[in-house]
Length: 157
Image (cartoon, rainbow, N blue to C red):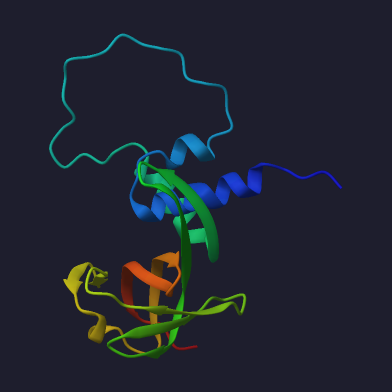
């Protein structure tokens, strides 16, 4: 059985996209390298989006969950990402279930960043049945929330 590099690269791209780094498109793009062009002196228009944002958003919308090891100045670190619906919530932790049935529990720390409906919020604002996306650090204490985006209640069917 042949192992492909595309799936691990896609997972890495999604993690980086959710973490906010602009290199996600470089990891996800399998086309030929761009040809160099002369630099221009014009700055982007105020409010203009970075060209990588649509591609990052498209990857993030399709991601369910994953884990990747990132190399940094302080060494390697393991990062988990998950998108799903909150099944249990407290001021200290949250449990999320993805559409494929994968479930994980994450602990909040004082440095956890929470955004509810695009505004800065607190872990206590996260409620059962909310749609969330999580980036979490995996360490000796388990999974701790680095960032959580809460889109509000999931639509009822």
